[in-house]
Image (cartoon, rainbow, N blue to C red; front, side, top):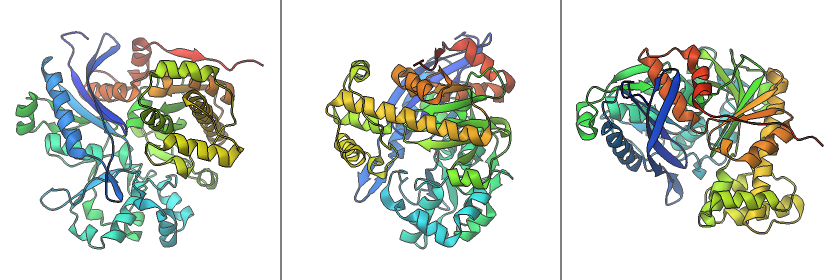
Length: 471
């Protein structure tokens, strides 16, 4: 990166780890370096599962100190996964710990919310797929457990909004993350009064909404002094990590392509101009989430690499390259449903749960790490290809699939996805969320134009192509 180019710090919190990167755009290329990586694991307390938000804040500050040691930082932006939130009181103190979306408190909550409002009506107002992890069932579960909760709450903030508030003192939501909550109407691009009213969630606690690429303000003096960030601006990128990642998809044309944001979750879909809120989309349980520049990400979630990540932890984190090589030569087994609830929770028993599900579905179980790895990657490829086929039926023909994120590095997965979907798969960039975050910050400061994002990525990152195998 040129010493003269303004430097931006991108904070990306994922469900399995976080990173702080420093980068910028010069001569039509995006260059950045990840300066700090740190783990993010939910913490079990009693029967519940929480995120250690204060430890994440400590790690963020440590990363920002490393960034500021390289020179002046022009701006900072935060992306995270969707759906998780914090409630603050009148003194802006947290009312509760921040629950993980994998907390089992939402078991049975989909049925509970449908007793209040029919599924079709909820979908008509929100266009969001029905998942137990959504913010709406989380809030309903929280309100059932503590009936006075919403009376004590003064502010509702999604996780990236909370970090931005701690950085600059301004409370604001951003459309892409708000649209994951099942509390947001994508047609009018605002909080859904109908949903909030039906479920007793006071509209007064919801933050103002801003566009991706909005300058929120200058870093607070106490934070600037702690991390050496004097004069740095806080910019809201597309705060949902997938939205920033899709902003960095290196597509060359306007249509005919789908994306897979492949990490702990796999999110497969297309970018469209308007929400697709139809009976067919509801029946398929597809979701409409906000993208950059008023676009809609029409997609569906899959379990992604989470199950394999949990297996690797249980196996003591084996060498991943060697594991993939062994998986490539392992015996073939029928695919399983990697979205089965049995595999939804973290734990050291994940390999045994995979074997148990195999026994239920196929009558036999894989033996050894390589067999399980091959089975999980094959199952993920099959599930993702199925989603791409169904989204294509609803939104238009798909000829190319862009895979971004950590899964773009796994050649076995990308080739099997090409074989199963029948479409060319283009892999890269790996750090798509960070790339989109940095591009949006640069655009917010007037350094580049949004229309140039995809060309900048093509100039900056080597891409690999996988074509369907013949025969």
